[in-house]
Image 1 (tube, rainbow, N blue to C red):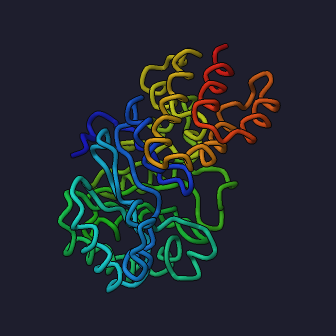
Image 2 (image 1 turned 90 degrees about the horizontal axis):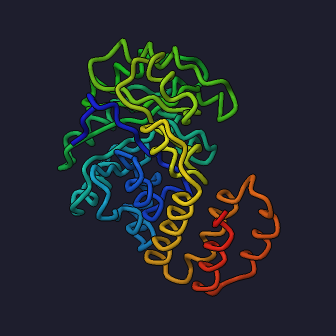
Length: 308
């Protein structure tokens, strides 16, 4: 499903941002592989709410499409995978072993699994046995407190992962420590499966990250917020024109409305705050759109503001 020989670019799972509308837009502008927002296995199994099930959905543009799940109990993970198995169009399942958020770690999930390698392997093996999807991947950090990339990468490979994604910080490093691309390289050199590099990658350093790590792919996270054309810029090394930026922003807005209805207007404001950064009159524009609920009016305002 994924041709790693072509050095693909992934969109990272981003809570509150990488929903279906954003994923559909980045796929049209250079992103090769999309991953869902992190979905709690517990929520999927015990709540089964429309909101949780909605997170499994994909847009027609999304192939390959991977669903990321989080959890620490292999039996619950198994039940969650059985639910995911019922959905067509999902090409792979990714196990989150990197989320540093305290409420996730307290449940022994996310990056907490980096401290319990036996359980990490047990969960990966469970997904492998249960899933009817083409791919199984693991997204991890370099370690919890200490950097042990080789140990973690080998554990994921031995348990049956088809590829791994590595964020170049420990859990202790949060999102502020310097990313250690050389440690990602160590992981890459220790395994035979493809490795995806992640962490502070943008259009300025993407080529250098490939060179340093020797990785098979890169994953773009926060750099894509307010800049979904970054995939196009990395691939072409050309800056996107103001006209194309406007087209992408409007395409994103239209996708939000198509997916969320009128509620999409209020959700899209956070994106407009990011899109307008650094542009003259941005403060007044944000203040104005914060007060508008009419879909047509706000679309007209977007078109007018970004016609520069």
